[in-house]
Image (cartoon, rainbow, N blue to C red; front, side):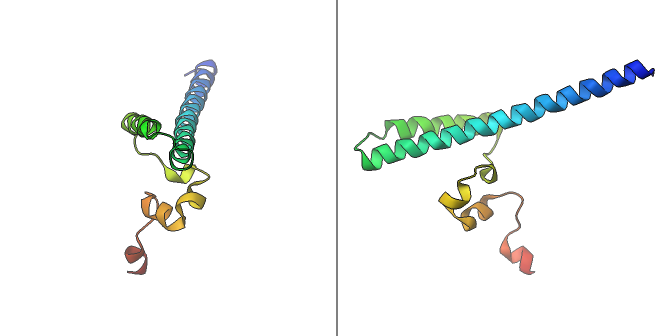
Length: 104
């Protein structure tokens, strides 16, 4: 393999990795936007006499997002720890071990 071919391969791999990272970022950003909208819809329903229809619509959008991209990683949402609590996030995070396994 010549120097030019090797350099071209490195550039192609770098561009591909960058595109993958950008795609992942956009997927996470879209999920975060849906959660923000869900929060607004729930607040409007609970405190401003809004209807439940927007909540259902956004939940369906989240279900579609999960079906297309897999489970939503709560650890990537900045507010997850504040809103849901450390215990809930740890319990639903795939990277953490259950307490029984840690102690055993």
